[in-house]
Amino acid sequence: MTEQKAKKNYHAPMHTAEHILNRTMVNMFNCERSEKCHIERKKSKCDFKLEKAPTEAEIKQIQNTIKEVIAKELDVTEKILNFNDANNLFNLKRITKENNPKVRIISIGNYDDCPCIGKHISNTREIINFRITTTSFNDGVFRVRYKI
Image 1: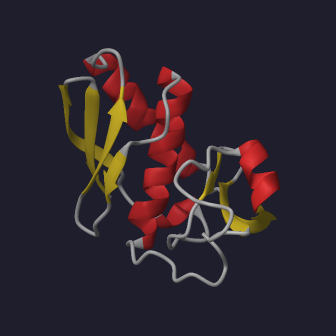
Image 2: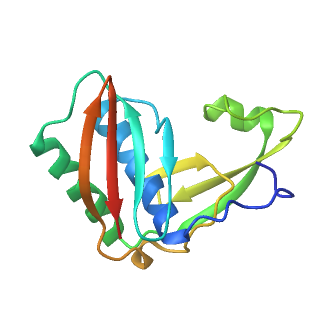
């Protein structure tokens, strides 16, 4: 996750929506960010470890919260931190200091901050028509499928 490494080739609006989804899930369910994500231009999905399946009302609240955040037209910015500083603020279990002495942090307004190497948009107004298409819950994994 250094400046020198190539950025993931995700569709930038979809990937930025994934960050907002992650923060919304963490805020609502006090869970970790997604275990697995598959981000594509047409549709994407994220898996979250939860003790129980969210209700239909909670799923609607997830979607509405994400739409509200997008509508705020928040700037998406980046900053670079040294590994130790980033490790004090974020869970860096997926990266090592040896390979990543500098860590890129993506911020979406004051809503979300997250280490990331992917492509992002410059403002949430570039995310059009976010919607959760389907969800499922199996063996403690809540899967959210969404489109923009």
